Length: 359
Length: 85
Image 1: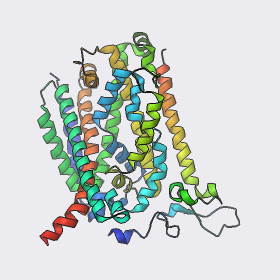
Image 2 (image 1 turned 180 degrees about the vertical axis):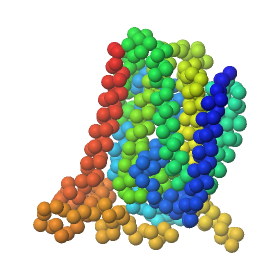
Image 3 (image 1 turned 90 degrees about the horizontal axis):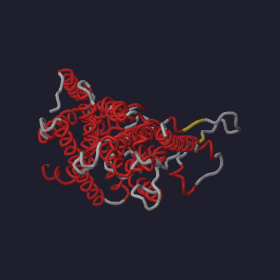
Image 4 (image 1 turned 30 degrees about the vertical axis):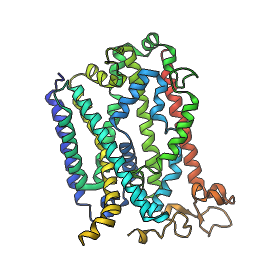
């Protein structure tokens, strides 16, 4: 069983108290819808970077990239890097999003097309956000259960996470999400890089890693006919990513909350670059796991590589840090999703259908 | 609320949203005229090539700088993978 040292437990408790405190403090700043959904369009470059990074990064991505690189080698990094060459375009897209002065994409569709289209988008957006949030919570619950060898059951983790999210999210809206993301973003970087030194120590360094593994495992682009990701695949998926990013339900709300256009540009562009940077660490964890575990050790599922490495490599004292980093990565995404879903529901379903009836 | 806010549309050159969206050119004959700092993606179908760099400077520098940064991350990853080989 995962033994949690009192220091680990104290770290977790302190973190949770800080998150709740931020939610309560943010409550004082909320006067209207604009404050709740867009943080009064007051986020500076740092907070913009953190909320863009936080809302786009979650634990299961680290688990998936580590699993894919375990399977196909370093080219598995492109499962998350598919937006790498779209990222520079964010610099040019962000001011357009901010100038639109919309809270969500549904507002834009209402102005550009019709009321019915905005309601349709709102319904689809809410379903997407619910499914995404559910998948993230499920993945986190299972990761926790795995890390604690069943001591903390997945159901308890889900319940606790939802309780925390609803509490500080409902109190403080996007401002609370942005402020907590500033802490959670840093913790997500910790989550990404914490394992690397322990893993390198375990496998005997990079030189030893090269000796143990096939050179093909270190290729960023797989050759044609191999099991890795080829250049053609990377180009097609990058283009697809560019088309899809603009209409993601949470995107307009997160980017539109910048204080100035420059804040939105820097936030969306470089917030996402932090994620690309963290992806490098996730990929190398997967490569290291190839040297440490056989597929049988992982029960035939490469996605378990990350969890196994966390359990086996981290000493007591670091586990509490890893636990809150995992919590932070999920909560920082879910809070932005929750506020986005709330904006879609309030402005395009409640205001148009339900409020009329109650009046 | 939205209708009220929308008087700053993406095409509104007369009412740029930010102060940073306008600038006065230095050492030019037009120094008393504000040049609108445009957005390439908005003006894509009717690009004005007069003062192209000045007009789209923020877009151009930011985009190519970010693109260079993206290649730098890929290059750094490749170099890290070569360590010890």
